[in-house]
Length: 612
Image: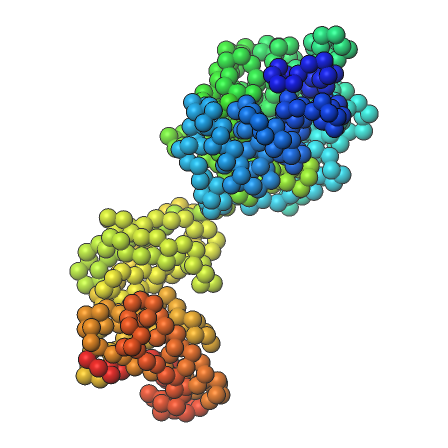
């Protein structure tokens, strides 16, 4: 990592800068804080402090120092990182303000182009359909960092963790070095107590890992310090070892024959390997030359023990920031994490389906959050995913169970003629009657939406001059379903004394007008607009259930709610009156012995014509 050479760098910051340049961020923070608290503080020190906190994923402290750094004109990257930290704190409007400045300073940067194309993407991400149900696993108990979980077809869960008891710590974040662990996934989904994979672990960083489909070859990352491969920082005793990739073979249940890949270098790192199902392509993350940002996703062909030339996956996937943690599924879908693409904050998980031309997808909530969400893997055989997040304070492993979605296509037609109805309105509700969404049919009278396989839904179709109609859609296992709804043309009966509508329904024991009731009242609105001198008296009636006092009050409330609805639709208040009659004017005389059918007929509204 290069140290910023602008603004206040000099002899005062030499020690802090060397620590920062050798990735010893905790120690660097201590040194920069001493300078920040003295009279030597300037924009450079504020920026370096913020960058140090940014590097150890502490958005709260990072944002505090970025705010000081931008009090005078700062670099474009400072504004970008400030925006990222603000997103991590859920301060999206303030983050967008920094992105505006960043985009004006670097208009041709891929991150700026993406932001300008869709600056208000956050509400869309939050509202998108849930793709996975997530649950934290039992693995993370003591606040250690756990990530990189990969489950094999025989239910072995491998992951990396700082839970080891070694006194040796990484100066980056003052945490123990990573080791590789294994847990057994039981038939009920619970996980056994993890054990260290001793034959793969060293005193330095080991992991993350990837295992071949036959379970006999493992690819894993390892710190160069373990192999004696490092560079010394000039004028210091500090050693910097780059991560490299290694393979090992399983023999008699143990990993042996550890071999470094020929791609490794002391000049750059390779990490987060993921091998394809056929074993012929290895995906990984690296900051090797030829990339677009701080780290990119790459791939390399594998033939026996021979490796081809690494290929960068291009700027559709990679950005000027960090992309990491690639995972390729058996059906050729690549999951990866990015800080440079539009997300909710920190690292977000994305996926790209190499089988289609569909754009890259952000997985949305609840997989992604305002925090760092990363290291997503998915086992097609088990239909189960794992990922890590620091949303609860430290990196912990979560399960990701796919939400079963079924695609429903509704076609709306005129019941009498069979002609399709474009621009008809569909209200989609869950089984409890809560409206999920409202959509309009296209020019072909069709509308499509997704629902959960397990729940089903109900759909109410409506259109001007048509009676509404509903359709119950049962739960289905998966796939697509085509549903037709036929709407009857509205035929309002107008007599000498009243306008006759279908029953206007209210919510049970309330005066709230339902969607069906509103559709009926809209017919009356149309009639009154076509007859400008017409005046209406609304009479509301209840059934015989309940006391006379209660029924009278409820019917009065419903009469007034009806009048208010008509006024809200533009009908003049001087053309409307209303009164509730409780159960005093039964249409079917049955007193307290009414049947359900009789009660239904007695629950009614009448629209008396006072003036034509």
